[in-house]
Image (cartoon, rainbow, N blue to C red; front, side, top):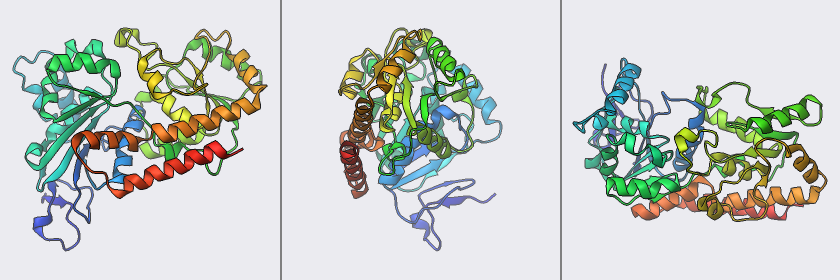
Length: 400
């Protein structure tokens, strides 16, 4: 099979070749300044939707070569074997091996090489991009999910982090322990949401769903809501498949759009701290899960438990951001009934949640923080998106 070149437009000369691979999946007409590999072509699990959504926002606001990595022969077996070897790798080399993806060779320079990983396993995938340090002036790793308690057991892959100029971690409680372990200063960068996708403004849909719960849940709360739904008191939408977040979706954009459309048609949106029922993994570390960003942007009333951590208080400092209920479900219907009797208060909460999210939690703001640290000037498209978000925030505040 003949090598083809991504970034080679119709009739473009060879000197404009940006990188090569067999086979190529897309072409660009301009010279991008950011190189970003992605595994979206072969890892489609539902929980990665927000991760790919963050990448999509960067594609909208900057000139990016999105390099869609592709699995080679027996990729799944090779990746599984590599993961096992990592746990006893005294050589320190396994974390830098390609886990069976087709090789990518860059052919031009970029201002920034950016890697956003949902978990540390995704870090192995960048080994398919050969020589990226030689072609990228600055490099950034944004590692979203890493619990502090897991750092010691993953000591063999941690040296792979040091190849980046800047390291961002999604969990605030992990930043200090990780920095101390690898001897490099890491930065905290929280999660976010595509606020334009989740916005209920300006064409506000009817909130026909009374309560929406997706992802992890407290079983006591779920039983109470299910009882109310069975009695015809509420319309309650919830997951019916176990570990649904780990199942593949057809298309991550369609999945996120469906989720957003349900959220902005919901009056109450259930929230809980990240992995609140997985103590073996968190070991008591409290972090802010994605549901808070998504439910707030959708203008729903957040019901559940606020994370007891400084990060949450800094990120969500406004009034009535979470209406607290007991995890055993003993008061959830009473609380909902109380708020139903105060429609003006509910409306104010909905407007405030979405307006504050538009001003604080869009993915564009996270990329802007990365650019500032990496010394990259934003393009006009980022400013245009920020202005649109501010307009929506003003609209949410003023609509009666």
